[in-house]
Amino acid sequence: MNGIERGAQPLNMRTARKSSPACRIGTRALATLALGSGLGVVGGGGCVSNPPGVRGVAGTAPAPNVFWTPPPLPRPTPAETTRATPALPPDLASRIQALKLADVVDIALRNNTATAAAWADARAAAATYGAARGQYYPTVELDVNATAVKTAATAGRISVQQRLYGPTFNASWLLFDFGARSGSVAGAREALLAADWTHNAVIQNVVLDAATAYFQYHATKALLGAQQTTLKDAQTNLEAAEQRHRVGLATIADVLQAKTARSQAQLALETTEGALQTTRGALALSMGLPANLPYDIELPPDTIPALGITDSLDALIDRAVRERPDLQAARATAQGARARVTAARGQALPSLVVSGTTAGTYFFNRPLATQQGNSYSATIGLRIPLFSGWSQIYDVRAATAAARAAEQRRRGVEQQVIFQVFNSFYGLRTATQRVRTSADLLASATQSEQVALGRYKAGAGSLLDLLSAQVALADARAQGIEARLSWYVALAALAHDAGILGLDGTSPLHLQTDSTGTNR
Image (tube, rainbow, N blue to C red):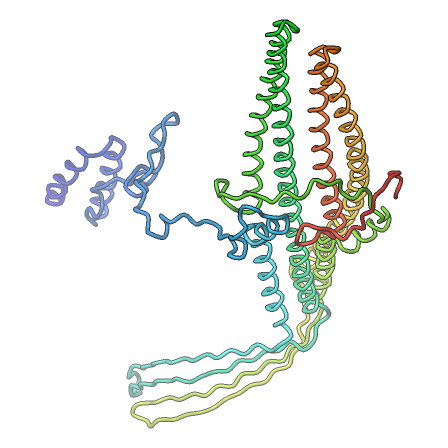
């Protein structure tokens, strides 16, 4: 006993000098336990860290007000050092500086991660449906076993060595049940349909987002052009005021007012230039491209769009109720929930199963000779669930409640779809009226500015009247551009809400020039 203590003492002393007091107490307790049991000290030389370290550093920060020091990062591989950039389609690389709306939508659909994820979910649902359909087919298994047995020579018996090996085929086939199998397959099928409809809905959402970003960038560029014109007019006014001041026809107040107007126009222009870069980055993001990618869009001709649609509100609502992909997905989800009720009920009912087994056994006995034999069995049975702790009853109740919830969600989605079409329809009518009114406003503001400019040049009007007219003209230009943007976005939103937005950003809505604004 003393020898053990003397042998263990240097180890304990070395450990105690290197560890904390708590660790030393734990080490002494471990040593005492080992000595008392006569086992000796096996692992008392260390103390387990709490929490454990991670890659050579502490697992947590030493205090709540101290940063945790991470381990050194591993050296990146060549593949990791190359930043993955979404590929630009080769067929669009030649016109990267003049992208059209269809090009923008095409790039967005190719690079968007949401569409890729939705497509992968649909493929996973398809595989799940294929696996569920396997319940209609028999199950066949092959087992191959090898066994070695040796018995001892006892009570006058000789020792026997035996080796057995051979394959075994097991087959089982569910012939009939009361809906458990068909309900499971139907639920998987509806889940696949829901995933496919969801994929279509995601595509339309991506198209709408890309089209909205395209129109926003287009409108900002148009606004920048309008403000450049306003700045030129302000510069012309300043030069005219300075010229009139030099010849004594204007006061210094006119020059200062003209300078103020020129500075305000310059400030608005610079603000719009910053907004243009922001909308340009947002458009690149909608296409799944880096914001610093050099690209530009082709501006369509500045013409008044076709105002009004001939499609009626009721027809659009009926079409949306039939074709909206998210509503179709909700319907498929509700159908799948009802199928799961059938499957849950079928689990509590009898089922008819046929099964069979065939095996070949080859064995070698010593000192006997090699022998072999074949066996088979066939069974047809009726499985009748009797009692399982009421779990099957609760499964049916849970499936029924889930089906009721899915049906209510479907109804909620349908009501939301109807409201969205209703809201977008009248939003488009409002945007149509705004385009018409803003065009009248721009015409009158242009005429007013021309009259004020002529009066000022003739000396019959004041500079203040001219500046006021030019401010009204600049505001009319901005409102016209904003109205045009709202019209394009409202048209795309109505097509999206009706479930008919095309893959190129266009819609099959029937447009016509509307002079009354009363179409329904």
